[in-house]
Image (cartoon, rainbow, N blue to C red; front, side):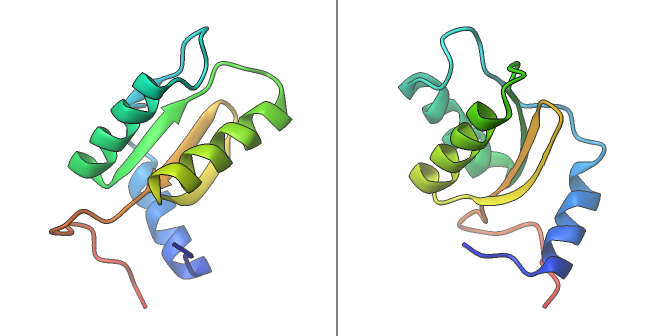
Length: 97
């Protein structure tokens, strides 16, 4: 799913007050973590995931893997936080055109 700059800006504003829903542990991105992220996206649509690594390349790889495997849009990566969006079957968040 591709987002326009206006849609991405809108989602960033909505995500600002959110707390991370999923925290990656020392085992990294496992099938269980992916299932938890999938469930959180289904329930919330817009979530934050905390990745406790300092390696930028690893964070980018995790971000790419999550977005590809779960069909989620990449909204933002800032510090240790990844912001993901995937519309639910009955969307609550209305995106601007």
